[in-house]
Length: 119
Image: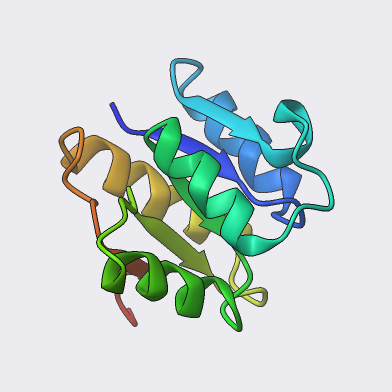
């Protein structure tokens, strides 16, 4: 199963909901690993080093830095961008679908935007 890193401002209600639905999900928060207050490139670098897909609400800058990593030939295990105004239940369902349907490494170099569909 994919390993996740929740960005510093990622909604903890979503993280708790994911773990309630599946306690085997390997998710850590930026705060849990001593990266509070670090800039986006540092967080993406740590995620790559630990092979963790980043969960974020930061659609403004994370995407830019993720693509910069790829352009420089650096690893980027994946990013899941979650809009702020989406229903929490829908976000949890979409993340669970991604986790259940993806193999380790399959999101490498990819950025997913939630919701997965407009229905």
